[in-house]
Length: 168
Image 1 (cartoon, rainbow, N blue to C red):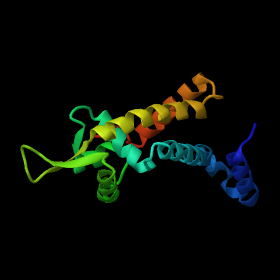
Image 2 (cartoon, rainbow, N blue to C red; image 1 turned 120 degrees about the horizontal axis):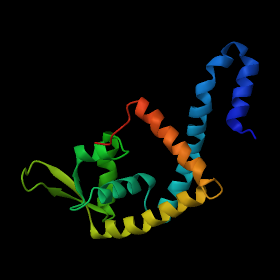
Image 3 (tube, rainbow, N blue to C red; image 1 turned 90 degrees about the vertical axis):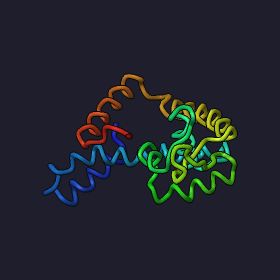
């Protein structure tokens, strides 16, 4: 069986036979990029069903998984989430307007502002995360669990070799 990445590699092999031996990374990275687009599209739709954008869902789940008191400083949040620092302020403004999060001053250092999950944010996160997991399971429903486990382990090793080993 072949896929779009095989076709791309085949086209390059025809067009540039001199680089055939150098195409091996395309097998992995091309598939990762294509998979990311499929998963992203599906995850965006699942988040939208709960009235939140995909990026807002990431904020909600980052705060939820941080544990009580479900509060992070902006700096800690950037390290723990999959969001760039430039996107934080705008995203938090929108989420605060929706009642999903609130900004609170740190009791120990009043200059420090923290982002805290509201009760409404908790409710949305619980429902959206359950649907998110079901969505992921549905995407992989036709894939053997052993293949998923081996692929996940292989990708872990690739990420480790690239130095991506921690979120903190």
